[in-house]
Image (cartoon, rainbow, N blue to C red; front, side, top):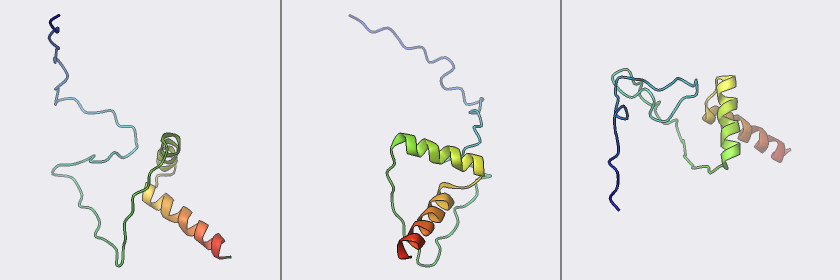
Length: 87
């Protein structure tokens, strides 16, 4: 059985822009107006955090509602947790 050809009309439209959800996306704003990433802070270390889908969605919504970055939210939460753990 032969496959039907796939119509690509409109799929490669570079004229339209994605809908702005208000939530920053990875790679968003690349181009001439793209700002450089901030320099690493003195002694900065990096880690990767795996979250389940629902927790990640809640983090994204909270970030958008409070106009904070994921980084700022997680740093504050970890600092609070460690302060309580030391008490």
